[in-house]
Image (cartoon, rainbow, N blue to C red):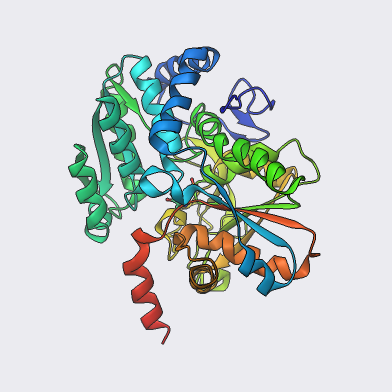
Length: 407
Ligand SMILES: *Cc1c(COP(=O)(O)O)cnc(C)c1O
């Protein structure tokens, strides 16, 4: 079975555009490196040995295929659609990010680049990158804002245990966007020896395409599994959207199934009116087309085009831009986007714990919240497939703090 889909779609075009979104907005010095990457990626994808190596690692190391689980008690309680969960929380390191980190690390190895740089916000992509580098014997340097390092001590320690060099970033707001700037700067300086391992379906072409292809294993597996379990396709697929990698990976399995509705859920934070959120598609006065970190997409910005500060209870959804392919899927109405607030995500997290014995990541809880809203409005013989992008163990501190605040 081919795990990686590359030929099912005509996007992006040769220049890396998804309709009017995407492209390569980078310093001139990076263009040859991006061109080299595109060629190496296409060669790797055309090489059955590369695909087999990745598939073997997914079987023996990542724990793929991850199962789908019928959420029977939750479905019965809601009284409408039958809810199935794609269990990326069961993948090694506890989330879907390893699918992409392993794919890119294997590509770096094939290109003869022994030095990896990555950026991380909450630390989840840093941990996935450090894991893949340890496995393949690559040198790993992770840029992380010093504010994020203080907030995410356990992940800093995990990365160090895994042999990575964690580099504190003291510029700007000392968070993810500053870490991305530093990682890009490092790459520009050391481009001969270094591979930039990017964590979501973001950045300049070919990253959004590569990350999507590596994450499409989620959708390819899930489609086969739901057909086997129920004899039919789901009516609706739901996934949370930070940069957009777990969602685009799920959506790609069903992209050509026109009757399957695709729903992305953004972080509504404290609500759109509060201005404290990370919902790029929700409010046209702040979420508008713009360029951030190498690609044109929807970006949260003020009237002068300054990037806005974002908020979400889940660190993984807390980013001012979104992958360009999502902007395109929304514009062409192949996918639809909504949001869940912090409060709704926290409630959904508790519901899934009590009804199904699964502690979901706060990010994934946004997708669960949307399923909880929709299921009662749908017939009993309909099916919702939710991508459970990760497990909630990393979020226990946050959840404890938030629940106490809520009384
Ligand atoms: C990082 C993360 C996300 C958000 O990233 P995407 O690229 O949008 O998938 C979602 N869920 C979990 C568990 C994460 O760790």
